[in-house]
Amino acid sequence: MTSGMCFLSDQTAAVLGCIRMILSILWTKESIYGHTTRSAQMVNQQKIMTTKQVQGTQSFARSIGLLQHICDRSTPPGVQDLLSECDFTRPTLYRLLGGLEAENLITQTPDRRYKPGPRLVNLARSALAQTDIRTLARDALETLRDKTGETVHLAIPSGEGLVYIDKIESRETVRMGSTIGTFVPLHSSGVGKAFLSALPEQGLVSYLEHANLKAITRFTTTDPELLRKQIEHCRTRGYIFDNQENEEGIVCFGAAILNDRGHPEAAISVSVPLFRIKDDKSIYAEPLLNCVRELSAQLGNP
View (cartoon, rainbow, N blue to C red):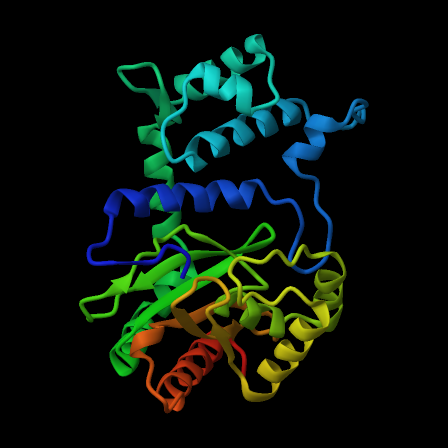
């Protein structure tokens, strides 16, 4: 939903996406359910640390932040890039880079730039393989793709939004260019709004009070009251319709998977290029609703 359309999937991008998925979970700033957590950035900014703080927390937070920055960059950064882009002194930066490199979490290119290391790639693959909801949902997602003919995404909460943990490609020639590990905001995406609609009321209220409803496209909902109305509509009919809010030219149908407590565990979307969408939206909505009902039942939700 966020990366346009392409003709071939990029395996390398998918692996890097898995890495970003792990790091974004570690780099959580605020829980979607409205409970504030301590982020690495806050730890860095605090001048007085509690005496009960676990030894090494600040160093770990800095290392994770640096690792996240290296992975998020479109090209491998050099030392000068990192000094100008990160709030580290030169000695601190060298110390953190040395530690990450020693653990094979980053590696240097021949021109002395830094990129994700082999150990991090293996961790990402292992984490993805062990994501239970992904394994549980795989067959249902493939069935949903076959019934709608379009690309299907599975997303779970991560930080202040969601992250794709699986993607079933459309068999059409023009396909979605999103990758596993892509982060999507809650307010602008089909999976995000579906997830919001399934939150307990307290979590939704907290989100609407504090969220930065940034415009992703010219169609993005940035008014909290309008977003609330869309969510209420989703609660009534069971799915959300995202009309080019996260990417122009792409519309999505989203619905949430509920666990045994009735809380959202994940969300699924069917993404359709605008030029290909059929007038009868039930072609997409009904298979999607059947899919999330089936998976919710498997998680213990009646």
